[in-house]
Image (tube, rainbow, N blue to C red; front, side):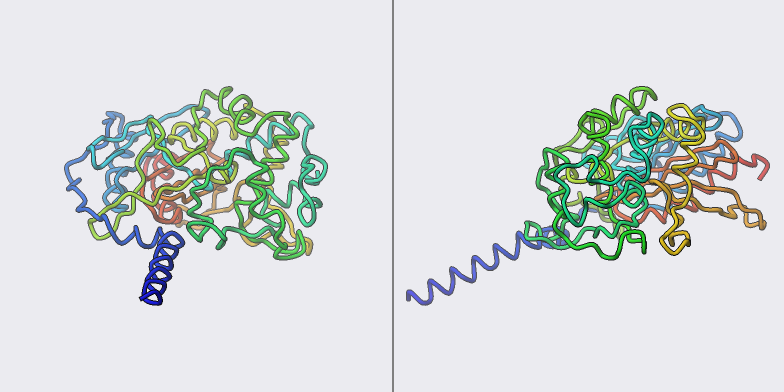
Length: 397
């Protein structure tokens, strides 16, 4: 009997342990509900201007194609917000429609946001691209201390990305622990070996920006959230939120998985370990205010903008494989399919239950931001953002 009880106890303990280790998988398979019919939902604004009305129609088509609970887009040109609109549910269960102030997780688009903070410090000579981590971060030891700002901000440092951990759940991406400081967040990877000799290769990792935010804190003399608020957001009258807990944030969308006309809320996560690289929430208009400022030299001069948008060279004198600069990808795209390319500075993001894209077209002083509250890939958004861009670049198409 004792042996039977012991066996049952071990079996039960193993099941409990397995559940908490793989909790996101267990929960993903339960709780699905039928998605409500959204065919009659319209954008919250109707514009009479022909171009703006065309953008409204494109938004409705994007909403149908993406099958997201809500899609929100804003456009800026010549330092003004010239169009914004949103369609769908901020909260499906309570049938709360999204509005122009609804905040979404922006995921890795946070890196482009953080680049503006870097620009402020570059402009004020408090940082330069060749500064080493050890010059600012006393708690950084080998192998992190010799890395440079440029290597961190361009993902050429060799720091690993999210992986498995001795934690519940087992994947760092689904971390729901609360981190009270950047130093605590750096502890997640500070003792891990680098993937390659810094500068030799490219490997995308949000942890680069976690360590980068530690440099920002020391250079500015302020906690990272306070610095970004006072030096970037408030001067531009933008209302970004940094996700510090897994609790519901006022004015934020609910975040969903959507498939086969069914939906469910995503697994609750805590993004406090990756503020600079993936922890911001914003509306598209907030992002456009930053995009406008970036294109029109509101926070720093053109020389600093050029530093932030120049693709970083590897040690072999070749540009890294993603044309990655300092928080931005810098590409040339033939969006009209006519053989003529235009410059696009962009960054996309995925966060649990949200996808985002911010794209700037410097030759046209145009910025576009698009957000949706469903899991997916930011690559799903490019053709949609380009469809919007076309009508503002060439209204006759």
